[in-house]
Length: 81
Length: 81
Image 1 (tube, helix red, strand yellow):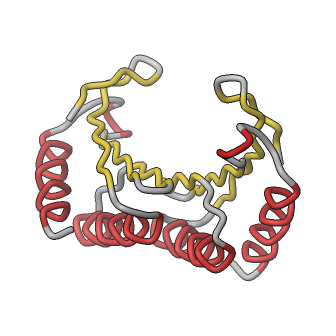
Image 2 (tube, chains in turn cyan, brown):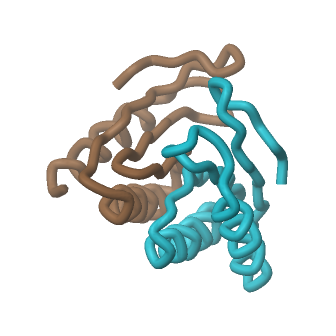
């Protein structure tokens, strides 16, 4: 995961490679479903062969413990792809 | 649709607002499925209450007629949300 700066807000960001668009979209769906379950929502960019997930906590304009937990959960989901 | 410049490549971009993350993700899924059907793939960013779709043609590093057709198709999908 990279620590990125978005308009002075710290965010966690990681890109995952996939063989095609369809698989990238399936991964996006799984990460989105996990986000819904936890009530904590990332930004997810889906492209041909690549999905980029960004976690941060809007309410504090930065990173909260939850973001690191969700980053780990995102990695777990990726292991099944 | 906005015409944006990404590293000297023209791209078509539009954001759609939704009431929550779940609906934004459902829209992403529909646009992704349409992309798969047509064999032409956008970048789609899914966030809480917002999905941003970007169309361009990698092979020509810019815009092709297909991008405008897919932009119109994306608007059609949005009308059902």
